[in-house]
Length: 243
Length: 243
Image 1 (cartoon, chains in turn yellow, orange):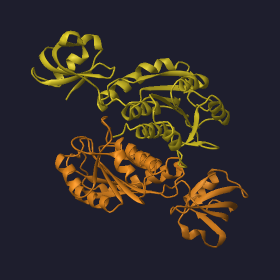
Image 2 (cartoon, chains in turn cyan, orange):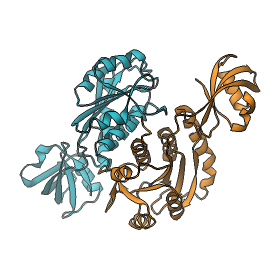
Image 3 (cartoon, rainbow over the protein chains, first blue to last red):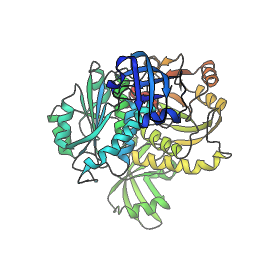
Image 4 (cartoon, chains in turn cyan, yellow):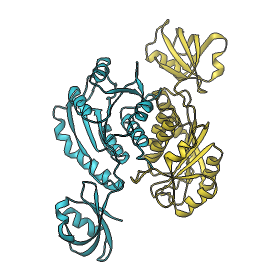
């Protein structure tokens, strides 16, 4: 069934009105009056609707059923990534949205090769990638993509969740599965991963001091664009959100 | 430490000889006599070596220590994917190798859009992608990439493992975490995922009849190139190979 993302306020009173690009989309998909579509309010609620009428500018739909979107995980995970080079950001955004992230934030860390003066300029494009991936994978929300700032800002974001995980490749670390086994009952979590060169030792030390769990994900070295997706999948699996 | 993949037979008698492209690589990396490198026999064993001498054609190394490669997972997972379009194969290969796959095989299924007359021609290129990813991620083997044949051939490959998982998006399915919880003690496993359009209903039915576990991975719809990596990560996590 076709899915459309719309702000909740358009859905009052048993009728939904779709305008603009989404109305055009209804036309392109050749949806006929009497056919059903799902409207998602981007807040985790799905509105099962039946098309009443549609023209180029506007489509009117009757709301048949209001249900929570079952695709939304029970745990809201913020993915925090040291800014990588080139289009690796796009890949991280797309795959993290598919795998169930609630937010994806990039930040500047010691070994970042990419040093955009104004990462804010990229946020619009990043957000569109997230919206596209959310539609494709049937998410109930459009995950927010943004810029966290520097390393300390990223740690600050992470510690304000129920379980903050810092992925690090060497030294003394906790085992990811042991940390997750001991923390099943969480509503929010954060995953912090590094840029191409990984984290500096002092960054890992700071993360530990700030109360994050410095974790290993096995002996295989994951690329900076693979690590967030693997860690996110582990969190989803451990919290029962992958079945 | 630099890693080189070499056949085990070159490592007899406490001395290793590197020739050809790898010898050139020693030169490019400016490794000096007395410096240490790791030679991997591609069978899961690492040889810690010290460089004795090197020129353009040949490098001689003294074997100091022979150790099992700790990066190899305890379970050998064969990833079987319905052939996708374009460079999605490359992505599946690279990420599956990072995530710990032992073998990656593509096959033809009902909804494959890509229908290469001779997929065999692509295998050399696929294998090079696997080799590159194995080096990068510090694997102890170079996972085999190949062509399984048709759908029945793929099922046949899968049922010859200890735990054969068939990922399917609709209908009655087992929960992936319940299947994995009930099958911790496995030496081999198979993950079967579909092409862009997913599997046909009769294919899922056949898989079930053949004894595969037809599994769900939650309500989010994963792209055909994302599903194998997510499923593989779940298997690695559940079998203790992600920490």
